[in-house]
Length: 474
Image 1 (cartoon, rainbow, N blue to C red):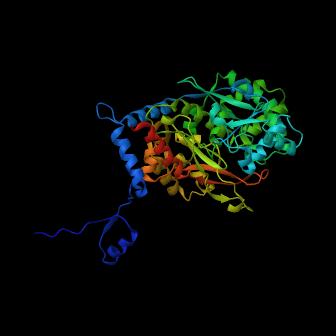
Image 2: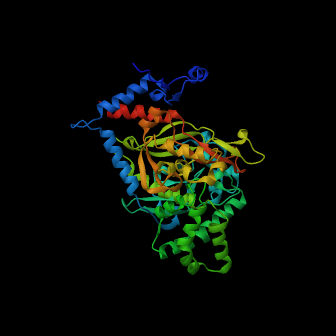
Image 3: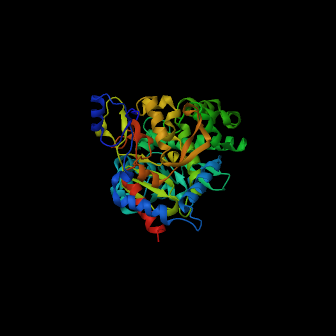
């Protein structure tokens, strides 16, 4: 009998590898972990979902529903239609209504930047003359507030939307639904990072009275702007649409430049608008990407048996997710601090926990999911090198329904972005969605202190999975 060479596959504790190294025995390390990190209760829940949620032909009702949601994401066509005051397009907005990022939260439980932004919004609306008076209005219940997502809206970081603020109005042409997002304020001290001083409010009034009307006329003149086309082209130009929007912002300006020239009132006004969009604010398109993603994801809600995440959002205290088959029910756990590169003079002790509605972009497969296609963003968010970013992107394929052929990544051999986060796969693999994010100082008024990557807490995924099983396994 001929003797075959020993072939070893090593699974389990890494310490076992040393024996093969010492004996010069060739081996292959198998990267394997038990499902649900060995939690027998969760493994049982996953097994029940696989065996109980089947149709009369023995096919998975969950897989079928998730394929329906995936198709809705792929076929979504977000088009920018208008820029309008929030009170004219968002249902139920009154002078004393303020919307915020993340799941619901009480005034007394809010983080510093969120409180600072609320105070600034109240003063911007002319409801209070001092910060103290504005805070008293919040404490006394004179302001009605709640999550953006409940009103078909999104906002970055603190996510504040008040009565007079102009918002982008985006239509998903495939399904006819609308979404809304504020205009990006630019850099420096801005309300989305909790600042509320005179310069912040002055800039907001300029957005309201000068920029928004000009944009609205220009957008109508060109018949709307197809945002999906811009996102697809910008992926090929090194953007991932969460932390890097350089190409996308310029392409948006290019789409409306001719019409914008026709509607500006003076050359000085035109110069200021052009500088704000095209050269002074490289994150301008972020808010448009968020509105586009929200318009794409809203038709994916309330699909029975679907385990796809339709929303990830943070209020600076708690991280919340919605799951398609569970409607608008929030699953929450404390926010994590990002893995980040801090700006000079700041450190982790200065950072507020994760915040904002912007993780809606990861729900459609851009942002952190597309880092492998955005080499320039990798070092900025502290993700290591390009190989690390590509590894993050490949890992997202393990927890999603499929790859979106409409959003291809040249640096990943033109693979489509990983699309449709499946709660089952997240829990089974232990791989969490990766989110690119900015980080606010924990004290209001200071602003951004770093950028980085962050994950949802696993608890939101496991609790959503258990709730899903309770509802669908009879």
